[in-house]
Image (cartoon, rainbow, N blue to C red; front, side, top):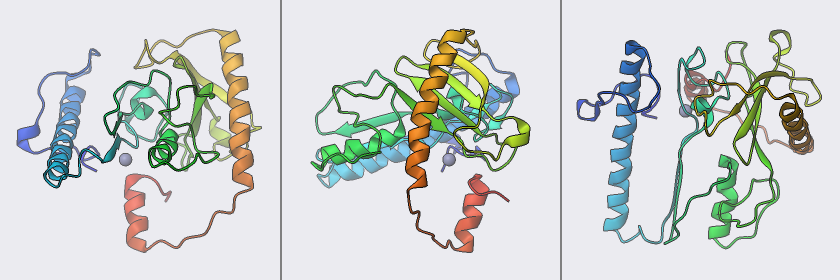
Length: 256
Ligand SMILES: [Zn+2]
């Protein structure tokens, strides 16, 4: 939880200067430095956890996954925080996997839904349908990954995105009048299309109607399958304690 608002790292973890090539206004940069300080603090805590595992002789066999639930926007797309858009700054998170002595880097675009099948594979359990693709899979079938925001307020937006294997990304969104509509057949407007690898801050939208049409068609095909699976699923109802609801609300995961 530390790299979340309010950014208030211990003094020893404070950052100075800039960590990215992009120039930010001074005030924003100071805020980012405090955020980076929180990440440094968290990094040290993870180090302490690793030291503990080593001490107990548990580290070598442990499968460890480090991932974030989201990034943070510092006004790259007019907002501060997260939950506003599906731009890289909000959804391109760190994903590190330690599994025995394996080493390597996965070049293709992946999704955090791939973590579950990866762990199943490492545990020697068979693959399960509908849960991404194992990161260890040498010949993955998927052509693109999806990302979705389930909006609960106009301000937070209600975007959907598709990123192909080469990092070409199309962000779609609803108009302001129909933000609550989530039917896959609803026609979505284009928020922007980017080469998210060479343009990580997504500041140079690509204008290519052919590519847009192809990504859009691919999105509707893949999202249609997701929506179909959701329809047939019986989601068990759970009752949350008021304190839990309050915490989720503070994090922005429950509407007012
Ligand atoms: Zn979070």
